[in-house]
Length: 55
Length: 178
Image (cartoon, rainbow over all chains, first blue to last red; front, side, top):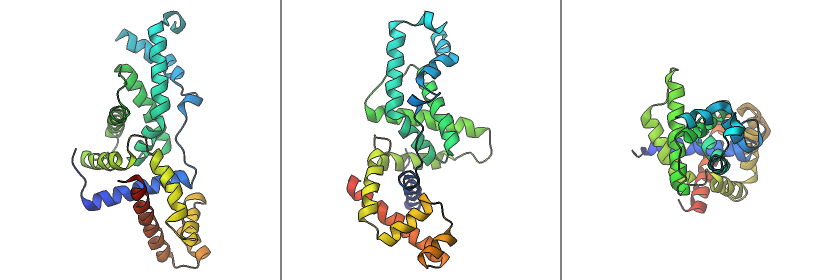
């Protein structure tokens, strides 16, 4: 894995802080897949499990 | 039928996947946001990531190995999605982003970073700077609105916010020892 240059790292770390502030102050939050239609049951029932079994 | 085919091994596998999703979904979503996905795209790619893991019959490893593996799958899913579009992220940018994420976010999907940031907002910036941050991130105020609220020039707001993020980064790094 190549290492970022200093200006690149500074820009990326600033972007990470910006994202964190959107979550801490702005209320942005990851979805909860265990409490939505996109549950693991949903994944299994989507036909994907059948596909993976057949594979 | 799904119910007819359900075996103990399948139930175990489903429970294992549920645990994997529970433990890592937030971190994978945050990583995808960090790589430039909007929230809806990140939602879709998180699901695609876990579907891919299911298909590949992934075996749970250490939290660090599992997190790194899931980030690789998510990154590949992002590249596949973006290849159909112009403006796909360059590999070197993704490699640099992965290096920064691995160093700063650790194995917990950014949770410790966010907790440290909560403390640093109380300790590392003045009430006036915190007010500017709240106006931007909580109230989604424009720079002109922030400038008016704090009696600053618009350019001064840009500088103030940049310095605030820098001070917060230093504080978070100290707290996390990174």
